[in-house]
Length: 74
Image (cartoon, rainbow, N blue to C red; front, top):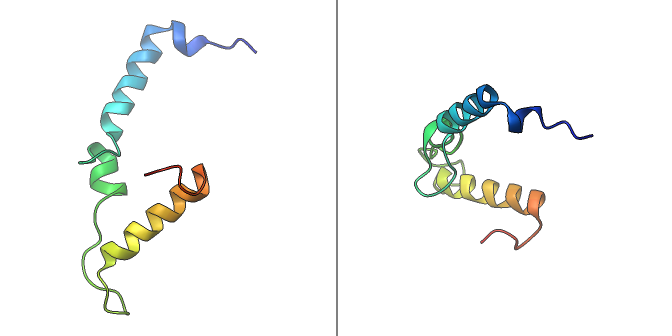
């Protein structure tokens, strides 16, 4: 309780800022490691003949619905 070491420590705040910069954002376009590794589009078609980007979009949508509730993310 009351452990706010990170909020009052400039060294820790600087390190957090560097991590956030390296990770980037989920927004459009995504950036940093999120954009290049976690949200990079899949290339090719699946065994059903549909683009893999369709499967990736469906998976991301299902995940966000699971985490935040159906319809919470536009």
